[in-house]
Image (cartoon, rainbow, N blue to C red):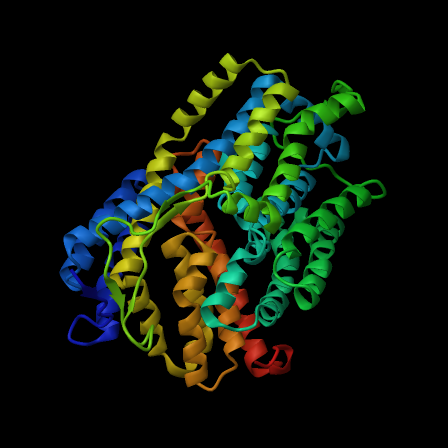
Length: 546
């Protein structure tokens, strides 16, 4: 049965249609912020409501709506849920082995200051993981590590979500930006240059913003030199690589340089006062057991191995080899979702909106993390029986997280295949010249809907280009704005929040994270809008010409 998208299904009125089909989004925000509903319940109800809405408004066949939801649920479990399970399992193994105490001592030897520890782990180390893996692994691992160091779980989750912003456009291995180039057919280096120029500014702001969220202005000033070293040492290589190389390496190389720069800087500089938590002991460092270099190296080995394995997994050669061997699960046509057609103005001629499922289970980031966990069993001499027990405990710990993620991805796929996402995007075109302001908001909304900057690029990248051309703007401005606005949407994406909640042991408390991150997300989105307006009207020459 053929079925066509109808983006203005209600009286041929795009704005009216957008307001009605946005009801599931309004419900989700209400459920999390006002009702304070548990995340897995709110997400599940949102999915059911979305199916009802698209069936009634768009006349989407029930079978296709349910099929789209099942495709999203499947993607929520594999690969997203697989990544979270592997990441938290790896962390739990290090705790079970007792080696995490050594990791904590080694970080304290660099600095006992909790602010410095956040810069090292939540920003620099997490950025490396985003550059090579993405898909929730950086937030999951960094949040788990901070909690292991004694951080409040809620604070750790929020800080890690904020810290994860700058590396996202070019992680994993440039995938979101490559997708944006693919859908717009604009040269990938020009898009990389445009996005890089915008996000370079953000990458200096984020470490400062993290500190303000964590401790306020006065205590941020005390460590401002370290904050600036962290941000600037990330920003400079980030800018140079985006301007002259391409999208694959900015996040990877910049994060390594930032991590090394901060570690070296701490050899010569210390904050005047050490910031500790109330339950920390001031003489903990002097009384702490001293470990040898070998003991520290062994304790850190799971994460060192993880970096190596992730780097190998991210290389085109490895991915090409695995794909050539056809080690993946592939359904070229997802059952019950065939013959869904997109319509103008998204495409010039009605075109089939493909529906397939592919899980590259060997080259998936979750498999790389799980392989690291298996290697860790031998390195840390953990018995298989103990590992199986830890894996079972980890799965039980994350059960509600899996429900939340699956339901949110189900909603995202229903939104995409019904045309709901496109209706919302097209409604913004009605803003005319104000589209410059709304352009990053569309990217922000795209990530809220899908949980992915890559998906936001696929959804709205072409529309951003067409609209800019219609309004006689440089298409690179709005295309890049879609990306830069999108990364701020990661803070409030229900998928990202579910990942953070799962890693922090806060399943059921997603609403608390959402309420906190919403205001930070809006603040950062406001900064992005200022950057876009500055580029559009004060310094248009900073953008490449197409």
